[in-house]
Length: 171
Image (cartoon, rainbow, N blue to C red; front, top):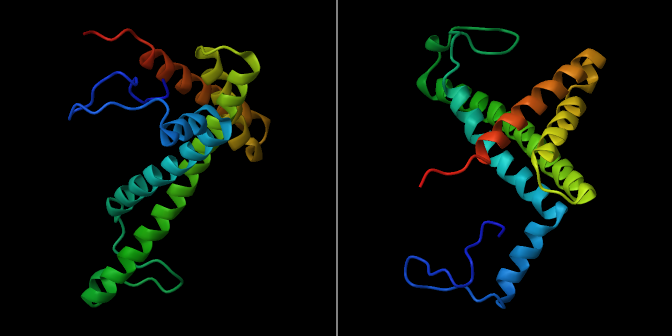
């Protein structure tokens, strides 16, 4: 339940969780609320997006010029300035990707939890509908065609991930 081991399940060192422990109760209450799920997904998405953005920025030096109004070859700059330009670019790209991933995680988890609470069911339709709504909302500024495309793409991706996660495990 909620990713926490059952109270009677022993852990690595033989520890057991007390179901009456106030910290366990708080964690369970947070993960049972839509606000808690959405907030945690947003924070985790922000962290994952930051790491992904940093990795992608470190791999994208396909141009030998510094960004800005007066481009000049990076190789002509002193090493310290080359590092400064590289880290500044990596930081801005990482932060931008982190914000986007955090927003997607926050929106998707919040919408999915709201749909699940409204329907009082836990099935694939919740994730698929949440994916459609999230994709449509994110693409709304591109017009109706972009919103429909975003809806279809996010819904298909959500359905594929849900299908894969709900498969019986081979043990």
